[in-house]
Length: 347
Image (cartoon, rainbow, N blue to C red; front, side, top):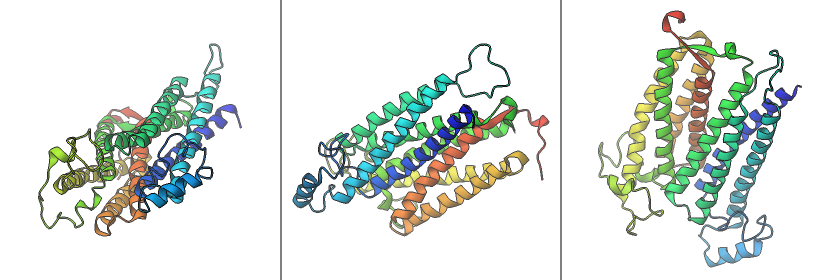
């Protein structure tokens, strides 16, 4: 394999591990393991929970139902180890990107590669993401910080995806044609999908999933009592308002219900986009993947509500959201806009 192919394989591996990292981050949060090691970057000053077993046992004895147990400590540290592994791979990719950057006079037959500035931006971003990871622990799961940490992970996924797509294209001719109108539709749907994922992160970080445990109504009503000002007060600690009062149940209801209402819009747009892409022959495979992911999100979203937020369903819901973002990023990055008159749809 050529150096370019090896670097591309490394990009694919890092993209896969970053996706896994997002899902494992959700697992860490859903199992209440985010404070399993309440310091950072180590665990009670040690590199692993093995060396901190005595401190963990004392913390667990003092608070048996608290956030610190041996299992939770390992979950939290495994999340950090995976994050460090992804960071190390990005350092290697950045170094290789600059080494393989096209020099003046290189033959045009040489395969093209993404600009090394993409890798450099990714490296800078993963450092920012690491800082948010530290703040997530030191600020005791502050909802805005946890949600920003999720957003940062999605940005990292997008940056790696764009580089992977560009690394797989030998030239601009390799891009797939897409009518301008369809590409704008993808872009608009993409923006709303990002907003919906952030709303989902806000639901999860505030533990508002069970505020509505029926469907399609919520608490037996189409418009239940809600407190939007409390629910969407961004700078506050978990479970309390900015003034220090316990957050009200109507506030949690507002957080949940806004996410649900937005889901109706986003899933409709995604389904319509899948139908539209299916008519464009070169995008048919992407259309089928999109339709499958829409079905997954609908099924897991309903399961979360009706089955009291089972862990597997919640993890699949997070994975499906990340996969949707990844798929639409791949579509946008590999699409070559053309006039509709130059593109023939297929029946």
